[in-house]
Amino acid sequence: RFRYIRNFHPERPYLQTNRYKQARYPTLWAMKKMHAEGELNDVQARFLADERPEEELYDLAKDPHETINLADSSAYQSILKQMRGRLDGWLRRIDDTDPAPVDSAVVEHYREKMKRIFGERVEQRRERWGLPAKK
Image (cartoon, rainbow, N blue to C red; front, side, top):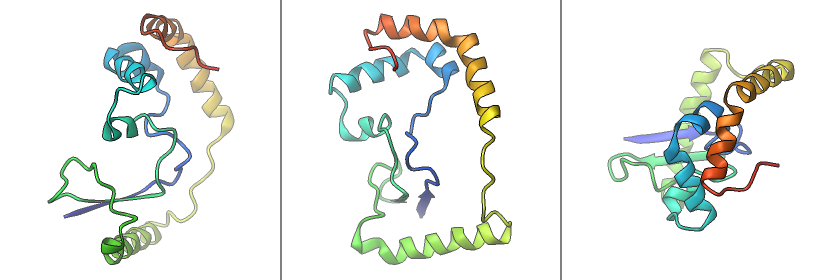
């Protein structure tokens, strides 16, 4: 009935950079433009937020679209604690208690590859939608 999400990197945005999507999905640009102009409601704007909460808890019976995060609600703390414990136990069982750091050289290789493949099209879309260039 409940969905628990632990964001191990809450400093990362919901919508992480994906040059393929930026080059191929016009809806993404429409949403970015609407976000920049303050035209999205709270639920829509959350998708474009710069960071995520550390934990999310949703009651799928009452909120099947996961729009109301109950993790900070005092009424759901016992469920949150139970779900947190289940995840922690599972991570211990599969020996996933210390995620390996990402090799920055590998990350940079693929970042540059995506820029080469999709960079020009991404910039064309950015200009078409009237959005400022990335810094």
